[in-house]
Image 1 (spheres, one colour):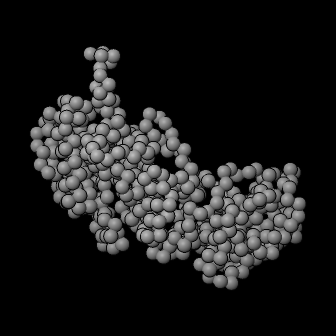
Image 2: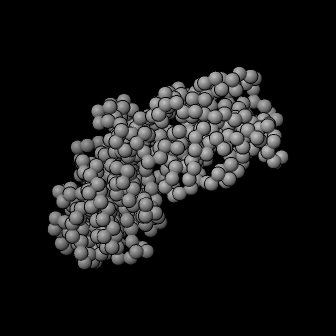
Image 3: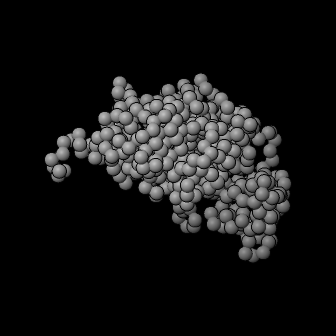
Length: 491
């Protein structure tokens, strides 16, 4: 029968056979006939990523997304049904945190494969299921969808696909033993079940719960494609959708503005607390007592201006005295004033010996033709300040002369927390702005929102030090002259 002779409904079934997004939407209407579908681009993003898993273009996938955004329907119900419809010999293991939840997903899966919809989309596969127990649905071609839960037994069973959907309850995530048990179950039980270590697929779709949760554990293994979908965008990014389309998501864009607009999200943050909200809705778990800094209130700018369009450049260095793997970093933040605001234009985060650190500071000074370098007067700071003073007075080696660049010793008088809390309003007001895009922005965001209880705070120290300088006498003085950029300045 030609395509012209097919009815619109038959054409839709044919499209569902080829395209997972079409099939998933049909499954939603089958399982939730009284609920209108709140369509959002994020559904196409999940569909595109899962389609790449089925095609083999991606074999390791991590999706993190807030609760109630159809992740289980897509990953644990519709996707296994679509895979088995296209290949009835495929073997899938689906895992959830409890047997009750695994059973609920399995019942929905059975409802799909026994439906008239499935028979019309996949007529061959629909008649191939020969065993439909609560947790084990098998086909005549040797394929199956096996559901299990954390700690469940899968001995002797192999899989082409392992689908991990919420392996831990939110209330268990704060217990180290519960996290250890989940990670060991993945390593010692699930990952060993792949029939082919090279061709087998692993999909993990979760909400973040803790710094050391299963998502962090899998990330640490490397090789995973990540689709991170926070409720409020924390950066500009290009997200692949179905049919080769791209969604350009901008900072502070709401994931589902019709279902959960900004005022609802703000209320949820207040009700559940910033730490829980950051983990489950922003996919950014922070330590207890973290989230002193509200990332969504920070002001951003679009593109780094060339040096000749920046009025002044100031470097702020927080230096460390060790190069050990777990030691603090030396961090330098580079700030340029465009006539209206201070812009964070670069960030250097390194572990170096003193000689190498001095060379790096000089390199960055020359690259940006800096006007001022602010250095914390502790650890290696005094030595660095002395060498920079020699450069400024032109009494060092000629190649290091920099009479155009001043240096200033910063002397902390209060705690780290007090210094940052006193200055963070400058980031909210727009006196200082961060870039929408930078290779180092994700690491900076994690450190800022987990402050003061995060593992690292060197970037925070460098920023707080600069902000204190910017609003003090030194910052006011450096901007007191002609505000017009100097065309002769090089970047």
